[in-house]
Image (tube, one colour):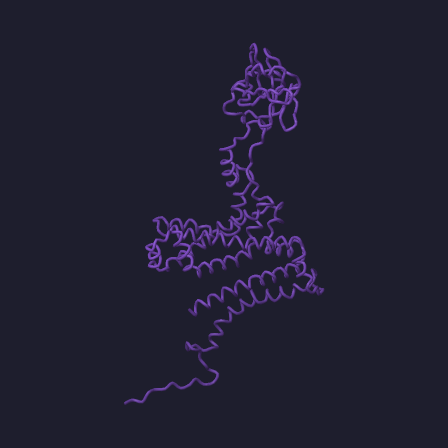
Amino acid sequence: MAAPTTTAPAPPGRRRSVTGTRRTVAALFLLPALVLLGALVVYPIGYSLIRSFYNASGDGFAGFDNYKAIFTDDGIRTALKNNIIWVVFAPTVSTALGLIFAVLTERVRWGTAFKLVVFMPMAISMLAAGIIFRLVYDQDPDKGVANAVWVGVHDTFARSSAFPNAHPGRDSPLKPEDGGGFITTATVRTGRTVTLPLVGVAPDQMPDGAKKAVAAQAEPGKITGTTWQDFTRGKGVGRLGAPDPSELGYSGMRVEAVKDGKVVATAKAAGDGTFTLPAAADGARLRLPASNFKQPYNGVDWLGPSLVTPAIIGSYIWMWAGFAMVLIAAGLAGVPRELLEAARVDGATEWQVLRKVTVPLLAPVLAVVTVTLMINVLKVFDLVYIIAPGSSQDDANVLALELYRKGFSEGQPGIASAIAVFLLLLVIPVMWFNVRRLRREERR
């Protein structure tokens, strides 16, 4: 029987690792990565930490003054408040939408196509997404998609005036009234005609129902009149105070007869601008109320001081909801179907299955997604810098943007370094929680 072979121990200095690789060889392979890690991570962190204790010029020790500025400077305090809003809402909403998309698309045939469409924004850089949403949130409804939709819905239920810029011209019988309307200077009588000329509306902006203006005919026991655009293109063309063949009537203009401060009769102008009031208007003054000249609804100021932060968070959710959906869908694929079917057999509704079975089973995945997005949100810079206009950038400020502004725009690198260290301190607990959770999962 052959004697068992034994392996001679490696001589000193030539020890091998568990996998049989020489440690020196392993160290040489790791050396480039360690050099890059030191140059790109360790050195910047160390330099920022040291620089945060010096003044703006870098030649004087400032102690903790730069860190005190984080909690006393108004701009930094606003950035800190906005960062809290970001951390609370952006990851939560993105994860919730990702969960909803993953669950709802699990059983439909076109679920893969839908997931692809939702995930596509991840292929767009933050810079490009910022430019896109800067246009989406444009105040002009003709440019901004958000306001185009909003104004369309609003105008469906509340029509805007067709004469926002109309006003009396020279020698007009009308004068301005408090509240934005116009009223005649003299009273009117039955059996007579009244002319209410206005100017200020471009011919191409007249209502679709506008027709050529005609002079009203007197009627016994009634007050008749005409309101029209008293303007004809061309120098020296047309007569003031009388309808000309090329002039259009103010179709739909509301006319009120006011006597002793009360409206006693009303009328609406026809397509040619003519209107008729009953005998009750005798001795009253005619008023064109302010509702005729109301400015068109221009939508919501999405990038104004009050809505700029929620608007930018919306653009972030548009980008990252697809990321959350893909990870949650992968976790959902590993959920035992027997548990879901058993819950349904026991009479649980789909909402109960989601809330009491699916979500608890997906808790580790949801935690990974939420923590990852929280770390990502703490570093958000591009979207805020690009989307927020200069007038409201202070209101949308976040710590990463304030770091940039202090370091490069305001020439205060000491405070900028303190903000960088503070951001690192904010990220460390989140990373520690994630690492601890992963280790706990491995032990299971």
